[in-house]
Structure formats: C-alpha cells, structure tokens
Image (cartoon, rainbow, N blue to C red; front, side, top):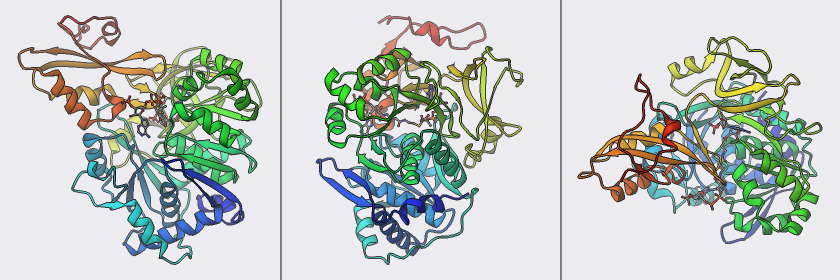
Length: 494
Ligand code: MCA
Ligand code: AMP
C-alpha cells in the first residue's frame, strides 16, 4: 500500500473543494483547494526532478508550519524521495548531527532560519524554490512506489545522546492514517485546527494525513500560541483538535463561557506525545463539555494504542491497541507478563518503521523477533486498557518535545570547570517536565554565564536547563550509577 492512491481520494476526486487555509505570522489567511495542492506539488516535483533528485535521495526541511511543507511532502511522495523534517528549534549541535547523518541533497529553509544551517550542506531558500516551481509544468510525475518505499527519516532522540533517524515507509504512514481516520470517524465534514509542528509525527503523520485521507478542511497555523487560542477557535470553529498536554493545560485558562462554546462545536479533541494528567482530562471535560481522547504513539511506530472513540475514554490510560497493532507487555527476560503486572510495552504491526537509518546495531537492539521494544513501562488491565507508568530510559518530555539528558550532560561536561553533570526532569505545571542540571564544578574555572550561552547556541530552547544547581557531589549507588531521584530533592550547596 503506497500513499499516493490514498492522497488521490482528495487531490484528484475532491479537486475543486476548499482544502486548506494557511495563516501567516501577520494573520493573513490564504485559501487553497485540493486541486491547488495537486498542481503546486506537481510543479515542485518537476523542479526537484530537474535539480537531479531521484528515488531514495534525501531532502530536508527546516521550516515553521507553512504550505510549502505540504508541497514538499506531497512532491516527495510522488518522486519516492526521503523527506527529512528538522525541528525548527534545533541549533548547531543537533543540526550538524542530522545533516551529517542523513546526508540530504539540500535543506529547504526560510531566510530567517538559513544562518543556522551548517555550511557544509546545500541550502535551498523556500521562497526562491516556490517561485521557480511556479514556472514548471503542472503535469504529475510519479515514480512507482509501494508499502516498503521509505518516505521519511524522522530523528528521534537516542539514549546514547545522538539522535537516530527512524526510516518510515509509505506503508507505515498509510496504515497509520487509515487506522486513525476509521477509529476516530474523521469525515470530509470535519474542520481540523492544526497548531502542532509539521516536523514531528503528531502533526505530520496524524494531522496532515488524517486531513488528506478524509478530505476534511484544515486551518494551518504557524505554531501554537496560547494567547491566540481563543480567537482561533472562535474564528475557525474546528470540530477536530490534536494537541500535546501542554496545549490542553493552556486551554484550561480560557473563560468558562468561551470554553463551553468551543466545546459545543468540538467533535473530537485528541491528546498525545506525553502523559495527560487525569485532572486535566477531568477539568477539560467540566469546562468544555468534551472528553479528551488520549492515545499513545512513538516516532518509530506512529500510533499504537488509543482510547476508543465510541467507548469509555478512561482518564490516565492510553486505551486499547489500535487496529493492526499487536501489543504485549514483557518482563526483563522478554517474557510476556499477565494482565495487571508491570512490564515493558512491545509492539508489532505494519505501522512500525523498518529500522534506524545506517544504525544496524541500534536496530538490532530495539527489535526482538519482529517486535519493537518501546522502552515504555506499562500495565494492561483485565479489560485491555493500557496505562503507561514511566520509561526504561531517563527520557524527559517537556511540552511534548523529547529530551535525552545524556545529550545535554555531554555538552555541559565539555565546558571549562565542570567535573560532573547530571540532568533530570523536574515537574512543571504546564510542560509536564523541565530539565534541570546538577553540577559539580571547580569554582575557579567555571563560568555559568558562558556555559548558558554555549548551550543556547548549540541546543534547542526546550533542552535548556531551567537552572544549574551546584552540588558537592552527585549521589551514586555502590556500583557508580547516578541516583537521579535523590538529586531531585537536593538543594544547591553554593
Ligand atoms: C515551541 N516553541 C517554539 C515553537 N514551538 N518557538 C518557535 N517556534 C515554534 N514552532 C518554544 C519556544 O522556543 C519557547 O521556548 C516555548 O516553546 C514557547 O513557550 P510558550 O509560548 O509558553 O508555549 P507553551 O504554552 O509552553 O506551549 C509550548 C508548545 C510546544 C506550543 C506546547 O511545547 C509545542 O509545540 N509542543 C509540541 C511538540 C510536539 O509536536 N510533539 C510531538 C512529538 P522557551 O521556553 O525557551 O521560551 S511526536 C511524539 O511525541 C509521538 C510520536 C506522539 O505520540 O505524538
Ligand atoms: P517520540 O520519540 O517523540 O516519538 O516520543 C515517543 C514517546 O512519547 C513514547 O515512547 C512515550 O514515552 C511518549 N508518549 C507518547 N504518547 C504518550 C501518552 N499518551 N502518554 C504518555 N507518554 C506518551
């Protein structure tokens, strides 16, 4: 199963229907039909072909949400390219790693972001590319593709510090979208307000694809800004909203009468990417009259488990396995445990990616007999509902963005005067968790301001430690393992 026939349900058969409105940073709203999207992506595909791109070549984008991301994605699917989305918040260290690892032909970006891209890779300006594409023939170029044709390399933080590219195929994306459109009853009558970034799978594989397959209407916003949320909901009147818990927590700040009106039109609100606290689920229901549907996924697997659309959406749980996804909970010996017993969640199905880009060892470590080890710890109740209880690794999730402490620790340790560094996630009322660094320093050599400046230039904003706590020693077990739980209660010694 490749993607184009599924996209064509909208691109071709709904060509004259309004498909999309894009809001620019200045508030200007531009409408497009599905036919416009077909033509724009055909012209872009012609240009990319003329620039020498062929099946299997990588093409990266480093862009805020805008229509050109959709053009690139569709052109990539048509030409069998491997599109590499890059988080716009990434900075020098993260960008250098991704361009070295993925080796894209070029990175498509905008004038305001171009200076951040490492020099060694070719940069294509998105505005120039779009202007040039507009002069190309509108005829479709489409190479043969199938379920195994890779469509995207999506980087996901690795426990070793360097992120790995999950190789997602057309079949993975097609399975995910078909499953979700069916499970959540998304139809062409829906109106989807898209504020999630298109460089991660929540906004891309769920948001964009559910829209394209169902033929519903989309309003694409550059990014989520909580101060504007009430006005967006009021203007656009969405029936569908997908968000991370931080967004739902922000939405609890709206006045009760506004919330009630929004909730009356909202057919479905879906939360994922991080745990949704049960009290947020309940407060949202009280304020909006809408019961959030929480689901669970990963970059490597797209969506795995979700609360039912028609049945009970149980707070604090991620629900039941989605169609096509097999789930088991295993102990340390890789043996399935009985219901009610905690273990690691393993998944299997056509939604699961084919492995990590050029990382055979990491791939071998994550897959066992065709099952993918998620690293998430959970328990299944007797009636099948799954509750996630934590993670095997010390991954921090802040505002739905993943942070591996090791990556930050490695950079801090490179700074003068730092003898030891450990980063842990502390609770945060909006973002769920935020990173905090605990340091053992040589006070005569350590310069905190210089360290902060260095980290800001090298790593994404959401990875910046909210504070740098100096301690006399990092607590360790007899075997030398850092006891992160003890650090959380430590206070500064200087
Ligand atoms: C976030 N920020 C941005 C952007 N997005 N800045 C510029 N452009 C963006 N597109 C950062 C800023 O650097 C700033 O960092 C902070 O967010 C803004 O803070 P604030 O305005 O207070 O926003 P907020 O109300 O805290 O909301 C933050 C957010 C953001 C909008 C919810 O965290 C977000 O977009 N999260 C979505 C992450 C996501 O899509 N995850 C899916 C991964 P500073 O703190 O320095 O001021 S896919 C996944 O996990 C799996 C597969 C799954 O299951 O879905
Ligand atoms: P990513 O690497 O960005 O794909 O993040 C995937 C991780 O996000 C999963 O392994 C989970 O730890 C976490 N996650 C996603 N959805 C949920 C959820 N509904 N509840 C708790 N954790 C979640």
